Length: 122
Image (cartoon, rainbow, N blue to C red; front, side, top):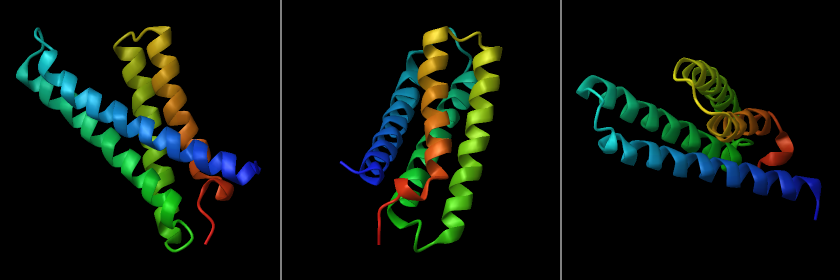
């Protein structure tokens, strides 16, 4: 198996993992019994942002060579969401396991979005 094939598969898997986490994030909003309506709206909005970042990465993976500006939009989005996740993890006192999963996924997306080998060949 070639390095490009491994990177392409990894990029797809991490992008789909992020999409799945986004759906779970939005679905669990309604189970936040002690949260205010304001908090629930923001929690759901964070799930929407995660879903959009996952979609951008899937588009970047499939069409990067056709749309060069898409790569920069994707990278910027990945960097912003990663930074937001770091701040959110610190502020909410996330567990080490939570930080490893979420920050690991966002870091992988950020790194892979810079790899031309992780996108599909023309």
